[in-house]
Image 1 (cartoon, one colour):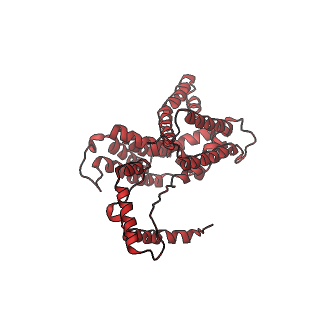
Image 2 (spheres, each protein chain N blue to C red):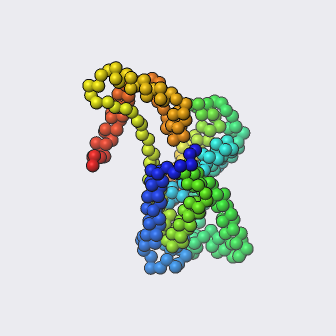
Image 3 (cartoon, each protein chain N blue to C red):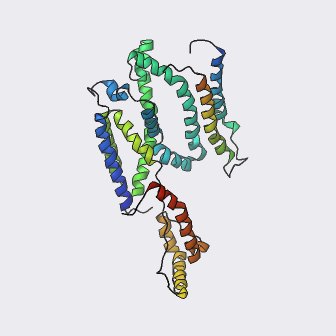
Length: 278
Length: 66
């Protein structure tokens, strides 16, 4: 991995970071409550998130840097153990399905905000309430730790060194969550859940004006081929995460076929989406 | 939810996946492979749709008051 800053990637990252931060602060005014100073306004979004918002919120909270980067990294590092993230997620859903509706009814009827409130209300024990609250915080720690590992990997890939970017990002996140409560992650979840479907890929080729003599094309092609066969060039391409086409694909005929295939693949999509050149 | 009707037995379906996934000796194997995935991995992945189907079956039997 190179230590140079990848300017394009960094610009995209900063743009989304700014977007999410602005949304995080605006979220305080989303479905505006009379006051944010009540715990259920801050911590439960005023108990008015329906199925759709909750669906996005859960999606955005489950499938994050933890899922996309940290879990694959864990599987690479420790092998099959890391794959426990999958069966773990599977067994959680039926448990949630069986338990949460009951918990939800009890909490709604009695105005409880946290699981600890429910336990205190049901058993009247301060000690048990405290135990549940502390367990909740401690049990979340490994997940948060993996989030940090994931984010650290992102910053490293962007070419940013040191702990400062990570600390800055999490302080900003903490500040807008402090000011907006659960409304912040719920609103941002819409961005996150959409972005997870975005992936970009591109390819390169060399073109010459129409009517260029055949032997000129052949000489150009053989020059490019020998450059692409050079170990130093291959290493540079690999460092940037780029793949070099196989020898058969490096011919002018193969490039023409590839271009036709790409046009066939993308043109209907471009047409359907109404995308035009500016 | 309060009646002790036989319908409630359907909830036992949800226990199936806990047995299937938490008992590792069931799937601690490399073969048979599926699309060159070792058995260990595709076995666990296949439980995603199975769990969704089982949860849906139980969900159908629940009375919805909202």
